[in-house]
Image (cartoon, rainbow, N blue to C red; front, side, top):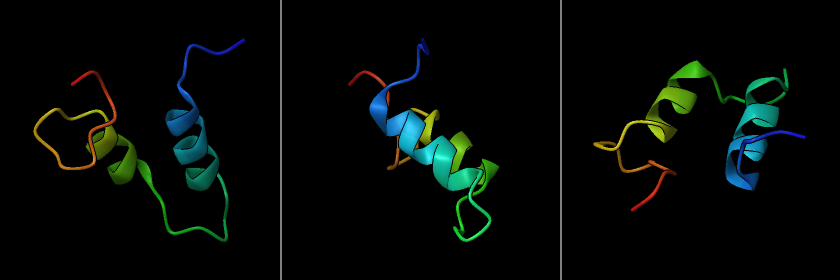
Length: 42
C-alpha cells in the first residue's frame, strides 16, 4: 500500500504516462507550499 494521496497517485501516473505532459516539475509544484498547485495540508 502506498502513502501517497489519490491526487499524488494521479499526478504520478500522469508523469509516468508518455502521452501526458506532466513531469517532475509538476511533482515539485505539488509538494511546494508556495506553489498554487500544492496538494499538501492547508
